[in-house]
Image 1: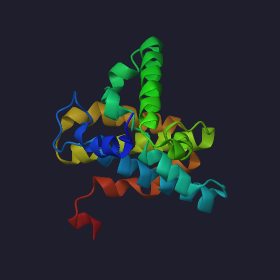
Image 2 (image 1 turned 180 degrees about the vertical axis):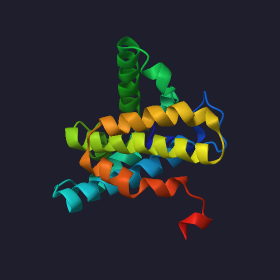
Image 3 (image 1 turned 90 degrees about the vertical axis):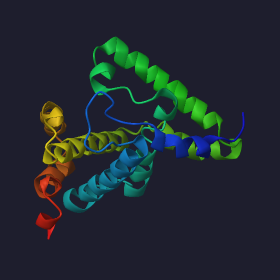
Length: 191
């Protein structure tokens, strides 16, 4: 197998998100992954600074950058389908795992050990923060679509907000209380 890992990673920009929804602005997994990394880093910093945590914010942000890398090979499965029932969820997780293994095999052998924990991180705290950032990014997308008048995202926004609140992560609650309102404002209102 050639060393094609980085060429594949660059193709993240070709995988569209929210395929079942009418979007005022399309989003791809490269853009999404960048935002998830920014948010995961913020959540980790909030955990450390506000709540006395001791997590590696830099590691968490890099794991977030790669959290959807498997979708280069699998495509983006819409959430209502992916989580329709436990069987579909488990089968899709196996497909994601195989895609991650395939991507790792595209790296030079000498680099694989460095990328494996980024693509297949199993640390519970890291995964929880990245998952929260991923869901937060989806919620921000919903809020921005609603701000643009796209009611297609109304139910998704409600469900995603409820899922965020159910996570019971203090750093996430802090972000929602102190930073989230800005996303519903226009550029002029941010001054």
